[in-house]
Length: 213
Ligand code: TMP
Ligand code: MG
Picture (cartoon, rainbow, N blue to C red):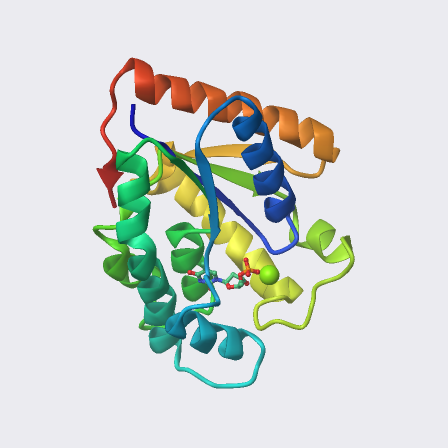
């Protein structure tokens, strides 16, 4: 059986890293082969440019940084495909949904969601995307936003609105399951596991092929 592609999305500080780690551990305990990755991958050359931009150490125009984030995913695509083919499930902390939504949230008149989607087309499409939902205000309360580029209330509120649009009205809306992330870590973890087990079971039972964006 092929591996599955599982994505976590959400605002900064929604708890994605914690929930990814817990899910990886839990699936491994079930005897699954799992690999955990994260975008942006700050270690590659494109990732180093992204890192320096996010930290405010360099400037990029909105379109260029968008393409760098996309490039960062394309660099990883062959190894994701190979793993999935060989039966390893990939859990990703942020993917192209963040790519589209954060870029479009800047309200640049020539960079809307449709433009942002273009460079992502052809990447492997998730079997499921779990949106850990938290309000921008609650996210800000969680130890406060850090100093990175997009970590401010106004941007996060716009990002959440656009995620809402993706989940309701986009062609990808069925990829999403929204989980309320304001609850306790253990409760969220349980919900995540239920949703993931169901989605993985469905792929196997119906022999669903991996799709592409
Ligand atoms: P991180 O906090 O998950 O490391 O992500 C860094 C920031 O980059 C976060 O604010 C979301 C943003 N981002 C984009 O703008 N485009 C993308 O394609 C991705 C993956 C993240
Ligand atoms: Mg962050």
